[in-house]
Image 1 (cartoon, rainbow, N blue to C red):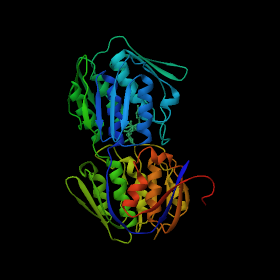
Image 2: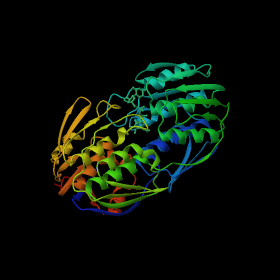
Image 3: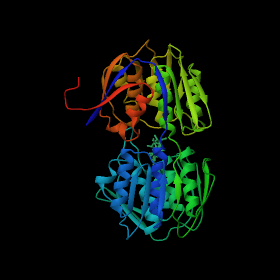
Image 4: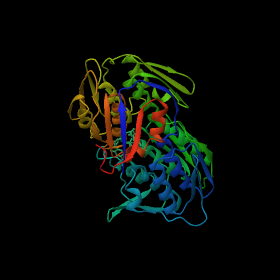
Length: 423
Ligand code: UD1
């Protein structure tokens, strides 16, 4: 296992380029299961989750090529719609194979998905929607078995605007003739990316990015070429990195539009953020940020995926502020680690109160999940002295070439093997 050694406390400067979005790329890769034709996806980040998707698609029988940011799929023989535990346990997004496989082959069997342990993370909204589209669901030896005798369109109201369930049901409905209406959909920008793909494949999709999406499916879907949107969570993480450590940085290839909730909050804290058409400049000369309360919400609210890095930034605020996590019930695992770095935070259920400290101090810490890991990187860059971050395999799931990009921005970071010699 690898670890990061970060010597923090230095002001940042420099420029780096934002990668393609992990959360947009994964559903698009699973959409390739809807067609036997060739699909080409560009700007795909090199990440462990993409590697896991490659392995799963290959296992299911897809022919995949993946390199230089491009992912190409095709089919030479019949697919086998069974996803085993060993492959799906690594990543929650593997549930996105279930809808496309059942829509195309009439059945699928998969083990319950894994991923970050940030809450219960059930899949009832996916399964409920599948049932309404005519899919029978049973459970066998820990697997979910899906059988579709006769798929039909439906009017489905989601209990909660789940991102994954919206994507899964959109993909499934794209192979069902007639109009399916999805209500209370997620409005995250990644939904618009998958909608654009489904339209290119031959489905009609209207309303992506709003809470009501109408899909008219086709009996067969075509191959496509698509370029994945920039990663808004990676962008937000770098904005918070600079806000916490100070200095001035430029992020190129970044789209500021889906980040308005974060940018508003960061500006309120006293940091200057300048937005171009495809770049963002952050100028953080203030010594301590003003305290700003946030509540995580579905898009366009403050993203839950930036809550942990936000807390790393706010831990040095001049006063007291509150963070309310409304999406996941167990997403404060970074707090004890930030407290090792001398942050002062109290947690009660889904709320955290941050009592700002004048500065963080480097310490040995451990990443418990992907975004908690990102928060520790932000904190370590801001902290005086050396931090050692262990279990960075979580971070590698979602941040492409992170240490290279951190160095572009002036962070003193090294990746080392965790062989017991690093203290
Ligand atoms: C996606 C993102 C993840 C982000 C999350 C919320 C991907 C690959 N991952 O995850 O980075 O943190 O959106 O913005 O895009 N829920 C249920 N039942 C379900 C589905 C979800 O109760 O069937 C609950 C979850 O437990 C959670 C909330 O709904 O509390 C949001 O989950 P969801 O929007 O589905 O997140 P993901 O699609 O898994």
